[in-house]
Length: 137
Image (cartoon, rainbow, N blue to C red; front, side):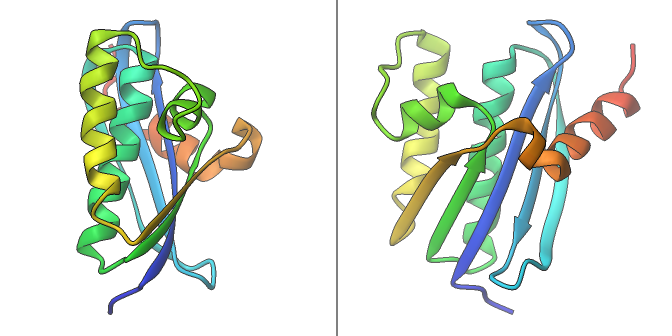
């Protein structure tokens, strides 16, 4: 079933910075029904790398689900402000991720990026921690 509008909740985290890192993504339809929820282990990475990777993954997944409009809810102020073009992207590794996220955003008619406090993003946070717990060192 195609969903033209989806809400993507993303989180990325690392235990240590850098350290073992993972993404967490929860995608919901307009009724609040979870359409997809998953995470990915990223190896040893920084927290910002994980946060951007989660957004990129969520955008790509939403596109495969048929979305034309998406709301991305992120708990990384850095990612939200950079993707909303309010903050500059200075770090070379983050510049590459920003570009990948930006290009993924261009495949939609409309993309909103919103910052939320971690407390409001518990489902995506849970995905990150489940993945990290499975890859405990």
